[in-house]
Image 1 (cartoon, chains in turn orange, cyan):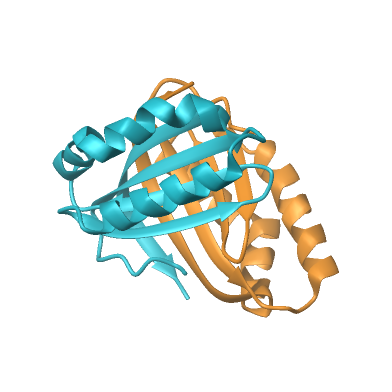
Image 2: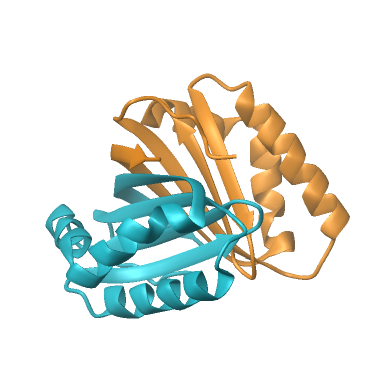
Length: 103
Length: 103
């Protein structure tokens, strides 16, 4: 689903990744659990995800402080430490959304 | 491929879309042609794309002025006018990338 975000400004975390072939079940379970947990975190505004060869997930947040707090969340930090098991490479970009339009 | 972008700040256009079932060939051809054209446009820094049910494409740019100029490009405007043929819904978000990290 396309996220139903508010009028800008707000913030986006673009997470781009190349998965390795390992531990598909463990990865899917951890990803679903992290999304469920993020949704309940203060300032969470929405989430979009797609995977072809490359995976792109974008989460939307009210403020940089909310993003920083989510990054420090205990279960999230555990998942971050396991990331090298699941990804050949990844990139995280923290952005301020300035304008939005669509149809 | 994960885009090899420079040190922030720079800009990102997050294009999230739901494709309809129509004109797969015409769509693929137009998408490839637009990417080829964007790559040659001043200020283009990189591109990432993935599609599951949802499609997410992110293009990276040096400045908001470069994004505005690309949006006004003649062939790009023709493609924009055809967008309703290919998409059930789409959302475009213009962002300033403030921080980047990865592995």
